Image (cartoon, rainbow, N blue to C red; front, side, top):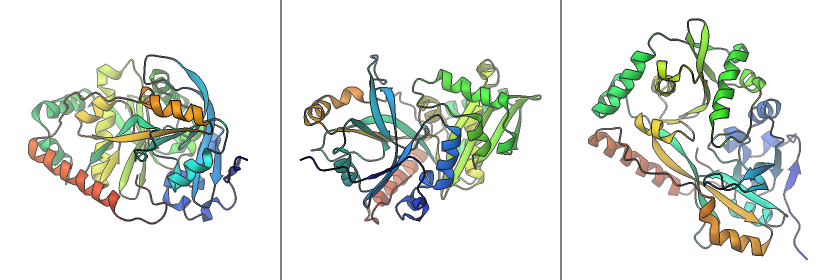
Length: 352
């Protein structure tokens, strides 16, 4: 007889959720954030508790070949933060999670993990990388001076194009229908949308909201959230008809860097997609992985054999924004981060 699934599935946020020690290690799984997502998202996510792990999951029909030119929609359950943020949606023992989920029927995808599974568990492939900016600068001017000349000119040109715009930090409650349409513009243009957030999400979200105005008309915005030493670029929106005129996307990225430098954050997490633009302003791509599992041995074996067709392949365009000496400094910092990740950690400890 097949063992029963040991996790407890909750359709609502359980009363004890914030008291679980594992959950406290992931700010994107805290009650306040999940409650805002619940009220502002069309994703009916569930929470799962278990002595060895906790996670968020939701079921949807997904094109599992979305990173290729083929279309294969399949009903799957995704384990991740229930908004499009490039962080994992579980805490605790990944081995215990996988072992437990294989007791359930269906196909399950753990999305945006920062580590591969062991080699003998070949159900791991790459998903969209997340773009991270490492802050080693005293101010914005010093940052500009470390860039190669062509990349520096590109940023200065963008700032000149956007110089006639007014940028204001506003309260989330002031998020308007016009601004929400800017977000919908981005969702419509996205190759890999997973959910559509309602206007209430932006009005309730506890973060920093900056809006770009052409006179009195909003033409772009960025939504930021900070946690410990990291600033997250959570969502943005723009008027694509004004994108070229004001170089909107570059100016959005520049604003995020300026806020990260001003706040003295050691890292800025720019999230996934648009890697080329983010690399040009000095980000580094960090691999993110997805693990696929099922409770069916035959299907599991097929997935293990053909796992790479589900994955995302990032093309190396040779984009190196910084001068050579600064490249070495960032590489050294990346090595330090990897060393930190390999140090012994408490059970369930995760990196963001």
